[in-house]
Length: 122
Image 1 (spheres, rainbow, N blue to C red):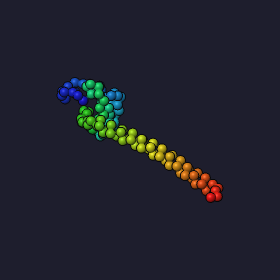
Image 2: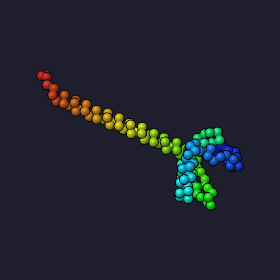
Image 3: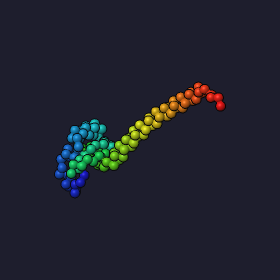
Image 4: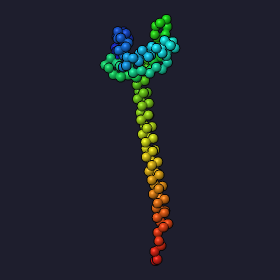
C-alpha cells in the first residue's frame, strides 16, 4: 500500500483506499449479514493512487471489524491473461475448423472434377 508504517496507514480514512467507495458499503453489508467474510475481492488504491487488487478476510467482534487483506494483483493479472489466451485459442480453433472445412470441400471438388475428365487417347 506504500505506507511507511501501520501508524501512517491508520491515519488514512479507510474509504479512501477503496477504488470504488460504494464497494466498502457492500463489503460492510455482507460482513454484517454473515458476521464474517472470506475472500472478498476488491480494488484498493495505494498512497500514490496505484491500483492494488486484494482479497479481504474479516470478521466482526463486538461491532469492531477485524481481519486482514492479501495482495492478489499478480494472481488477478495471471487469471486475466489466461482468459485472454483461452479466447485467442478458441478464435484460432474456429479459424482452423473453417479452413479444414474449406480444404475438405476443395478436395471433394478436385475428386469430382478428376472423375469427370475425359480420357484422352494416347
